[in-house]
Image (cartoon, rainbow over all chains, first blue to last red; front, side, top):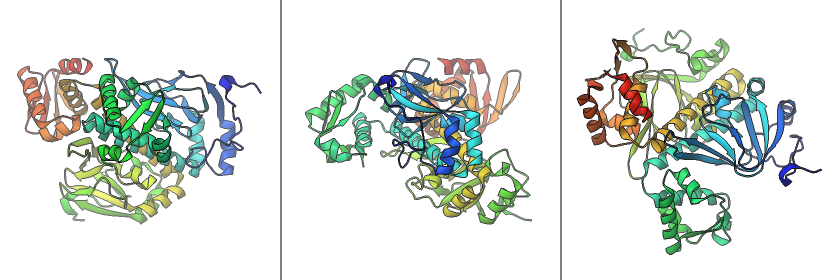
Amino acid sequence: MHSPYGMELVEDCLSCKLCSEGFFCHLPKSVMQAFQPLKFTLAYPAGATLFVEGQTCRGIYILCKGRVKLSATSKEGHTLIFKIAQPGEVLGLNAAVSGISHETTAETGQPCQLNFVKRDDFLKFLTEHGDACMHAAIHLSRECQQAYQHLRSFVTTSAPERIARLMLDWSQDDSRMATAHGIKVALTHDEIGQIIGMSRETVTRTLANFREQRIAKIHGSTLLIQNMSAIQKLAGA
Amino acid sequence: MNSPYGLPAECLTCHLRPGNFCCSLSRESLEALKQIKHATVFPEGAVIFVEGQLPRGIFMLCQGQAKLSTTSRDGKAFILRIATGGEILGLDAVVTGKPYELTMETMQPSRLAFVNREEFLRFLKEHGDACLQAAQHISRDCHDAYEAARLIALSHSIPGRVAKFLLASATDGQGTNGVVCARLALTHTDIAQLVGTTRETITRTLAEFRKKGIVEIRASTLIIHNKPALERLVAA
């Protein structure tokens, strides 16, 4: 089958291989069968906007494949990136459940596969299926905790500390890979600055310092952590 | 019944019942909740839980006020928000089983109902309406966290942040001839920790506001003389 953006679309949630532990869609089979008719499988190119902050929520998007950037912008045009969503995350869950308008803007960073569910359908689904509702609560709690941690990092001032923490976060999944061969970080200095709430210049300077001191270097889109203990010390972990 | 600080102690007959979590549950769920909760009364300044601590359970704030704060490694405190009656605290930690992210401290004598983690999770599994309410509650918490992050990271002017905070505090205030009065029982240190700056900056900013005749704080009353000026500061 010819598929858009060279990506194979998985239409059937029940036989989907993308889904794994920790995914929102990792639900008991009977619940999954009820979920199947509610969702629309969509493919988006990179740079597509799924929803904009302030917009009324139409529904939720389950990210099956790809990366999505969640950000907010101030009146002066400063941007703050809350997070880069990974596959398995639900986008707009917060707004769908609370009924408040979206507080973030979601923009795809790569070609993505998403499952869209209309808000009314989704709320009905949650009311009928306790398991799914509990899943939603866990998902929301995690999002909430990430937001608290993000917030705490703004209260600390030092740029090296913030960047070291970010690197630790990135290397969390595979720290051996990060120290031996490097992990992929497809972000510009500008975007890194928007994640940690600092200017592009500060990020560039701090990263140059890290390279000089042989702590970590970013080459192209690959991050190689040369001195893990120094990073951990800087991050206070 | 005589209760400490004159606070009521029964969920089903509670006359407080503001439109929040447990208070808007079905009668059946409320009965089940009654079996597992322990009502307690805390004095002012009691620390209920501390960030980093493993979650023992949830605390429903039935009446009173509590501040939710977080501290950075270099000791700077930041108050995320002031919780009021009807809110549930520690919900995200209990649901995920990860340590509490925030520290909760009462600001007035408060009546709290405690529910043990295992019992609460079982209660959510058995009562669909409660689970949905819990999810809604967490999503509102999440919304507040995003708002706070946006306030700190994106709005750089301190007068703007203070103005935004004062306007938010005065939403339920009473207005006559364009002058709005509201209760604001917070110290300058509290306000500083709420908007993410130092006590000195708050004192200076408030003094400037008073000099310009925009806002005045008398004891624990906030008096806004010139609301449009505050709104302009927020928009700037």
